[in-house]
Each structure stands twice: as C-alpha cells, then as structure tokens.
Length: 319
Image: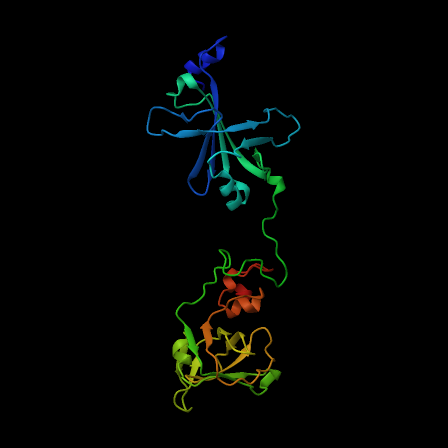
C-alpha cells in the first residue's frame, strides 16, 4: 500500500519535488547494479540499515499495458550507458547478456527519500539482450513456461546426454595416479580368445602397479612372483608416445606386473599396437580425459548410476 505522504504528492497540482525511477539489476550471486534515471546520485532510503547509492544514468522503458489475450507481458528497457563509468557492458558480455537475471524497477519521490517503501516496486526477468554503440537494451517481463523444453530431458538410445565430468555426469578424474618415464615401450600383442588383440605396455623402470593401479588384488597362487590380479578393470590414458597415445583398459582377468601390463584400446579392442621402443618421456595416468557417451564406456568408468542415455538407469538390470 502506498504511503500517505506519497499519495499526497500524487494528488498535488504542483510540487517542488520529482518522481524518480530507480533500477536494480542483479547479476552473479549477490552483485547488484543500481541506477537512477536522474542527473545526480540518489541515496535511497536515507534512513535505516539498507542505505544504497543509485548512479545517474539515462534509461527508458515501454509503457506498461494490460492484455486480455493471455500474452505474457514483455517490455523494452533501454539503458544509455555509452559514456558512463559503469561496467554494465562488461558484465553483459561475461554473463550471456544477463538473461535470466532479475530487474527491479521502483519509483520514489525526491522529497520523501526517507520512506523505505517506494511508490512503485516491480520485479521482472531479463528475457533477452541487445548491445549497440548507444545503449544496452533488455527485453524484460515474465518468462513463459511454454517457451521452454518439455520434458526437460531428451533421451537418445545408447547415447548419454550429460557433459563428461559435468554436474550430472559426476565422473571425477582420480588424482595422484601418474607415471612419467622415458623407459615406456609398446609391444604388439597376440590375438587372444574371441579375436581380441591384447597388447603390452612395458616399463623398464617398473612402478606400473604402484603408480597407476588403485585396485590391485593379491599375488596369483602358483604363478611367478610379482604378478598380480586386478580387483576390477582399470582404464588409463597414455600421452606423449609417437604412435600409441589413447585410452586403454587393463582387464582384471589378466596378470599385471610392475614392469608389464596387457591392455586393449577402449575405442577399438582389436587394434594392434605399433611397436615402439622407449625414447621420449611418456605419461601414463589413471582415469579418462574423454568419453564416447556409451553405456559400456560408463560402466568402465564405474559411473553407470549417472548414465544419461535411454533408458535412464539407476542400478537394476542396466546398473
């Protein structure tokens, strides 16, 4: 309800004061631009704990009209900040036009800046933005839910919709499991059961098991000393080789040693290695840098509970 002093000002035929538009644009988590459509700084309110300065700037807005057609209201808000010291343009560029942020428009009276309740107080959302040499122009109003995708998620058969390592994927790169050595060599393996060719990565300096594999089981009974089984299949990346960079998988049913591991390439299990002798420094790191977005790839990363393909899964027969 409008304060009685403002009602009195509204009903006067002439007044020495002026009605002033104030504007607040929220960006980020708590930052706010404060502007006054005036030729000097306006402090409002002048009493209480919420004192704020509104910087002088020229802005205009479309007339507010009523519609009986059910159309969602939209208004053009033009801020002529071409020659001001504000960093509005910088924030517009950095914040995707500030689309989705809140604009608060208020009307106060210059003779009653001590009143903490404005005569007009309206909130709108920024729907779009246009920047020209003369002004920053926002289209503000109430967003229509009919303009948004429904349902929110689109499922594609056998393809995950999530961004790899994003908030919905939740895959996290293991840290601290890296081996860098100039004694890494690659050897062409033999074709095993089911036509899959397993290859060999060998480390002259050892430390493959110690530095890379985080789930090493026990020694194999009856096998030569120093051979281990893995608790689970383990993926890792190779970078820095001349011909064999990629993403590899060490299978849990194959033995590994500190100096040798048999692997196949995730994207192409039958692809043979190119024989490559140790020379330049090569980095072997636990985990994956990318993802082909398949359910099988998600399983290799122990992340099927977050798989974003069709069907959407959380355990069960697909987990």
